Length: 305
Image: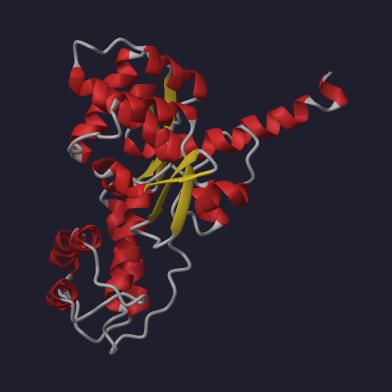
């Protein structure tokens, strides 16, 4: 099994196996695929070598049980099984069934409110220019909602992606992951930063530096309210408490964009189109104010007057 998986991944890397869309697999996807190999080695060491001809349904069930027993989070197990399924579908000798019993769970995540973004914007970071750039980048990303990969591409060559129509500026690009054409209005917060930086943000930083900087900013701004993070590990629901800044990162910006836009009254259809989301289900996983939205609606009911 391990040799087979490694062989398929090698053919993906060389371009001999391509995606359903006809593209080569991205380095990020290949990295995720490779993450399953050490766990397969561990599994085979405990359960014996898996032959090339075997019951794939039983194999996935047994692997799921094994990974869960190692104390992995439910989402980690689900992602690994889904990735392995995606790899093995290229082996014609297998008859793979859908992974109907492999489900992810909604993770506990945070978003940055409009008021918090305004407070971040007001911070005097003149003595820490590096974090000043991170702050500006984060507010920009919260304004446009792009994934970091697309955001980094845009910020590295801003003028290549700016278009003007009726005296308004927009970012126009094709997203890397979904290959969606998106046009995003540049709001006042983003315009202020573009003018501050003279439409030249310079070389963008790495994702690791950016995520670390966002956490520093959150701590500096005093975003310390406790957040209970529910996660299933080893088949059991656990609770861990963090301060809000500890859970902030690049993806918080995309989540903030979606949530703040919906709270402001934009339709799901419009926000999905701007942000490049293809399905309602995928989009709603980004929202972190469903209960607040419901409460706002209920608050208008005569019962709560």
